[in-house]
Length: 418
Image (tube, rainbow, N blue to C red):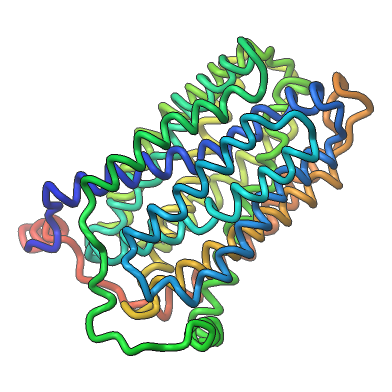
């Protein structure tokens, strides 16, 4: 029964990791709404901006792969603090970047450290939370995404309007410094995976994990999950401003509305993932998201409230994919392989996101910085096709992972009905 109840310490850990994810996600996500600002201020093309986004993802993917062999050899708390500190330094460089090329270097530095953070967080979640409540924990952790929509991005845009595009990055640095101090003081060591562990060569461990056919299937599925969800994202704000005629002053409202709905939807999806068939929830979310993508990318100029509704529906579908898919794949690795598995998985996810951003930058065009974004519907159709492939891959992973017993609530209702 204890497996289904979160302890006070577990709740604190969820809150700390959610805040950590908030800053990591915000640093990555804020690039999209700042895209129109950067293109105009730095006088760059959509292709150059796409490369600025993908540079973070590629460096994050490479660092994650390099860290995979070492991820299971250290206390996960120490890894979290080390990479979080490096992330803060990289973000500070972004906040001080005077030119486009300096920004590229700063994004690469940020990615080298920030890219490993997601894997460390997921490894901690997998170590500290039983599979029966893991969907709930992941749902709350991924509320960092919603919080970035509700608070971080709107405040960041406000600061960008007040000063310039550097200000949001400096805001993230201040917040992250506070969080890293709290983690240092509150979190206990996470080192159960080290008990009885043999000293294994890091690169041999990496090869062993990466060569496992079961793991490889999950890695490919995770990569497609990232591509399908990220193709449209880098140019979302530019599309809203230049095609749907959303003003820069209205843009924060759009993100607030989407974020508030996500705060409600994500914990709900997490609970549903713990109680019902995870793949069916994922499949429903994939179909829902695909329909919304096709409609959204073909919208004419409509009132702001209509754009808000379509954004809410779209992100509801995306979140209904991400949470059950993450819960399914994290059930696959054993205790001794989790750190390496999460690092490789996160790295491939980052690299896939970088490829998606680079491809999006090559597909969309813009005659000048104030003209409509062209070929955005093409990105929508490609995204839907990738989601269909991802559904097949996730189903194959679903067939080979262990499936826990239903929660006590589900069993109680079943026994009552009989």
